[in-house]
Image (cartoon, rainbow, N blue to C red; front, side):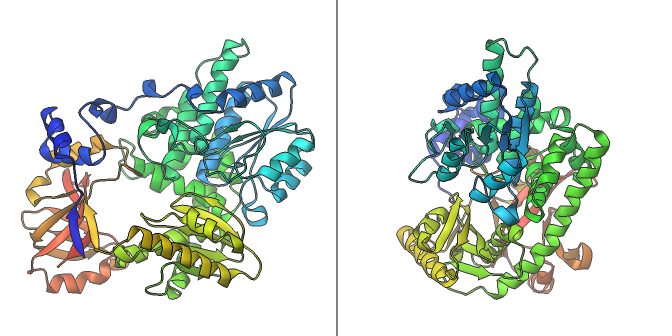
Length: 565
């Protein structure tokens, strides 16, 4: 496997050096599309640079529909989704409409019984539980619910669809706010909660202009929810999304909903001072998601909406327990899935009849991660089926939603993004789906000639001397990290390990050191202890990320990704 530096615009890097950045930092910035002209906005994203909500097509029509519902005092339901994005989006609009004195009620689909979004089963339960509903606003779903929207309208119920998923050939006949339908480039990457945040802002402005609201700004709590969802839904961290996440991290301690503060207090990293995207992506977000995976997400939604300290504390405990339950189920399913992996296949379709539907997506991601770890150039899309419902994940270079479109003859329902999607297989069509899905992935691989050179791209070759506390500290200026602004990946050439030892419970992890005292950890690689010790005297190449550790004296700690000899 060849490790190769990513190609960079030397001219842009030179301009960044002229602007005061070190050559290595200039390279990292140029690789992420930062120029000397955009440097200030990149390092200091501010809510002042958020675009006016009216720039998002469909907002004005949606606002008019909401205002009409207010004039007629219609009972309103916000129909969300059971993942973190859907729950945050639901909370954003519920909180906003409560402030605007609506009769508003949140409503989530039941994942196991009904599936995703605005579908026939969900509509049936919605009308049973809220027979007097007259206005429905979807968040993080609905763009492909053409028939369901028409049915609600036939019952005298107006609908507004806000979503960010890819549309089908036909759109619902109602006001639509969805950057995947039409949008300026700067807003094209919004998640469902990001769209809800834009609508909420527009509503507050319009209601204030109409003399229907005279309260203060409510942007703080709403931007925290939008930023959390942006990280958790793996949206690109550029343009407006970078601002949303950066502001959410800065405002969390002051403005986060009470329940999220209680949850973070329960699970936060020891000694955490400044929150980072990891706190959203690895601590809070997965726990909110676990509530929807293992149950129906109602605990997490109540947590986010709670206004009572004791209730919030108890709900935080319950949500955390759901995550522990999810981890246990997930590990069992991953173990069963790995047995089914077929080497050399153009796609992996895993069938787990005794699995948990809510964890299928996480399992697909873990299996893909395992395949990528063992042979990155051979990573292929993974689909995990529990019953007739499945989730798929794809590595870079594939579009799993396109693969599902090509497999639609075997499917009753599907939707999602290029990297992640959900679907339902028609009765008796699992093997037919396997064939169609594999053929579609084969076509994508052939079209892109994926992996034919076996290269892994890194940000920069460096020396141990480059990894100073000052330089690694400076990397934190590039936060928040995430999709399209990943943590930098470095590599050493021809280095030695001066010490190799196990760490953690049952020796699961490795602690390593280089001559000169630079330290590193290699998570979940305890099984490599003997092979590394026996060859520690031989030179090797090491790929890693760099971080600052405050355990003991402040020092650099490398997080090893791979060792190549």
